[in-house]
Length: 262
Length: 348
Figure 1: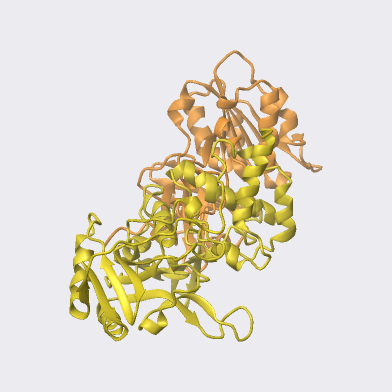
Figure 2: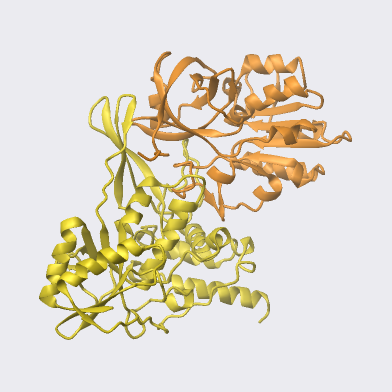
């Protein structure tokens, strides 16, 4: 029998914990190679399948931070420890770590956009924390992801968290991420890469602001979110121009991404 | 070697094909047309000479022979997934040069795009036997295969031509790598047909509709903001008929069907870039909300993006999209308009 690329593999849920009221991180048993920035097609048979990016991978554990927003993710949230999720993948290119290592790295993430770069930030903070900086924006204090991780990171490198709308208890920054870009250490005479992940509108204005700050577009890296339905370049849903996000992406240099217009 | 069969011998030959395989071709569906008491001409099962309709263009293309409207990818039962048994029966398809070229376009997506081969398409594709129908005069209304260079093919297994009181056929002895299929056809024909002189298929050399494809360099993102697309937003209702009738549209969407708590099946079904929801992601965000933007996306795919990826244009000029559009949008006119817009920009 030929290998069926649409078929899934049952994967055990080792643990899960809520990040916010609607975001939950699942830890899954996984022992095959994965590149940070790649995604899986995760399914619950009967409910359907959805592309979900990995938030980290280490020691045989795959981390996925999933937002409960539809039929498939509703069904995923029914799963308990010891239960199974059904995966095929990983797909896509992921982040090229070796190309980041020689540079200072700034990460600008919006909302759940922090999830696909969580593992990458962790890895960079351990291997080359000099020049690492994170600017993360969320809608409200209740939407802040990975709170304890952010606190831990804060001890090792500059972390700026802002929320669109604060609350009485919120002591941090408020406003859109774009307004804090001028405060970042973007021009300190070192080779720097800036990774931008988030909703389309946020990525658009962040990249424009970065250009304004004098960043070279080849030093800006973005990760796209699209409806990657098959993940293997057949179904057509994620195609932009002649590019298939599931095959050539989801991670792109901005010099390429700026030409990808839906 | 050519072959002649009387109509009744042709029917016997078809019956012979049906013993081992399946036969599809252009046929008629009485009272199934868009309006009352009209006939729908589309692809269907061919059991006799009377079923085969050669003087009308079909509403749907023959692509379902290799890429069905919906198909089961696998059955699930708890943790296990079982792929359906794949048939080995040959699929004989009566089709025209544009559609044979259309299968070549589908091959690029399903067999060659990305590291995976689509096993369902590959299985059916290997079972296809192309029985070429020649087009007469200028082809049909809205055809523009000559402009697309798809009026000609050498990938036919046999060519079929109507003759007085019967059918004449010729097998393609020059088709490299397909000798087994040619032998299988020859052996079958020898049982039912009389041998005649060899002949070669005749292809149309001129259509009533012609297009001029803009060069891939000149047709670029700068056209995205052109007001021409607003006209399509006004006109297109996003019904997706152009996609479903197209021989080269290959998009699909997954769908789970549940039998009970544990068991069910995952299917795929044709999807359309013109229909609302095509780009929607979890949470509701999507792209190309205007139908004009979808028309632009499809047009670029058919005559620009695909070329950049595979070195050939996706559109084969069958003109079915023009035939079936309820809003009378003409794809060939759209192509020519883009060429005109670029010429105008260059001050020609």
